[in-house]
Image (cartoon, rainbow, N blue to C red; front, side):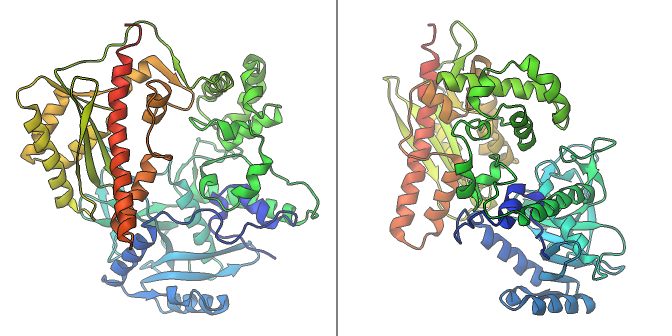
Length: 550
């Protein structure tokens, strides 16, 4: 007998296969990446707020090292006592259905029974215009629910959370503790709801709002989280049984397909040697084909970039398209992947798609801008490059390597925009950036503050986004991010060996929280140099664009 945890249905099936196949070597303990930096702190702080709130709470995290039967008994006792919120409860295993799991939260239904809940260090909400109703609970009083307009759960990006909750909901059934009213579940994410702070959003697990699995039938195009979970979990159980029945020397039953999970999966060291260096899923990282699309192509004998590059798609598509009907625009996706494959074979990273000069607005005073944000979504650094007109320039920055709140974040932005206003004065000036991120951040922070309102007015007339120009004139084999375009086109290279926005978030955390002063200083320098290189890259990019077919 075996059980699978709440992650099985949402995770790559190769993980389940590898865990049960006797011929697969288990990864060393600690292989792969753990939680995001700051995640443990966020979750602990959220639990503290729940405990300090108005609901009755039993915290079972302290039992995590005890025998599982003792933990299960404690969870059952807390539910039998009618506790309003249970933290870290280990639910009794359902051997017959192969389920096991620990719930971050169990919230009592006033009508009887419990709803499962999760605490996630991630944004789980979308603000949408229109009369979209959502149900929330204060973190300090999870049994209390209210509705609010204009918000919705990120079903498309956060479906996996709902599958975890569906697993926990099913686990509550055999012990007679499913909520009486309806199959609801809640999630506390890192979003602030209407400036009221953290809230738990409630999901209806029976509501047909989830895309079906590729091979799953759906009458109206969507299924419920419970239905999608049942399909995925059944497939994992069958895979575990088949893999467990294999002999040690039997080949794997599944071939790995690279996905976003691979970046932090402990099994990556096991899977990577099974992939051809030219594997489609390994080499195409921008707008990649999904796991099912890759699998269908492999069945058709197209597994590598080299094979797709020379394939006759007109012959391939009639058999291919019916098998990938889950994907809208499947033909366009495949043709795009083939185009990228052909460029990869040619060694072309950036392809010009137009001819003639490219117009880039110019001014007497030209400035480049770039911001850096923390994982808490706070702008802690405003960086500028001020061109001197002689082929060089100077870097100027406004930073705060501290834990910013609303007031401090807005004050930093005001300082940066005051400097910009004073610098510009009455001169003819333009400020260049790459994508609209800086405009979006200014808009979020303004909220009637005079200096930031000036900045928004100035930006509407004097900020120049270079990304639309690039998109209109180029195709990027690996996308059109600034790192790709500035290096492949303008020949600019960052000083850091591993530049990137996600890495800069980690460096910021080291600059703020590392116990060693030397480590903090090194991280701070690394962030500032990275930001300086970002604005210098924009400067190099626009200068390069002006030379094309001039």
